[in-house]
Length: 305
Image (cartoon, rainbow, N blue to C red):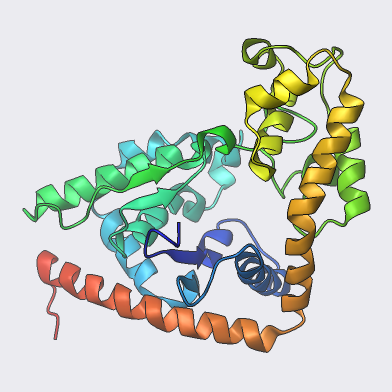
């Protein structure tokens, strides 16, 4: 995307604290995300890399948009219900209003496209509703563009290696449910070898594959780390047991992930460099955000001198 668009990559540390975070871990995780961005190929000279908490306009705009957003819209957000669980009365207010802060992250830079997985598409639809209502309320046509989702449909949601119906997540108790960017070769091979499939041979068609969520998930991962499409993989492995398929998949993941993991580890040993990346990115983001925020304050009638 950075070759075709002016991109901003935000480390969302404000979002992180919707559930309690150990302060030392939060700081380390912020550095790790920056290192992961860089190691994955994001160029700080072409794109803006910054952390959310250093650009206070995110929180300021979130309050303004909270006064635009309707309670009923938030009540429809399925992710809050999933994350809060049965005892939602004990969930933080931040977890409930999280989608408004996400809308602020997007609209503050008048973003036109947002890379999201399917699980975040509902939040982007809420962002569009908030933007449209703001434009209508203050009679400012197209002040906020209505952002479009940027989704890779083959890998829009990577599922757990242990349960093809659950999203792959760092919060899962089992480390064998996921591939971490810093996993070494042996661990990746072990995780894929132990990943769940089905008591069957590789199906011979896409329709058959769709009946087995774990198999479908592994095929999605395979397409994500290679230039092969799903039908091509099905035709190659159809009728075979999964040992060879898993071995090839593990090798493909190792080829893609290992160089990234090595670079993350190298960058994490150079916090001074990561601080410099953030410092430059934070200032660039603040410059863009301050212009938008000044326009917003004029629109809603705040004294803005």
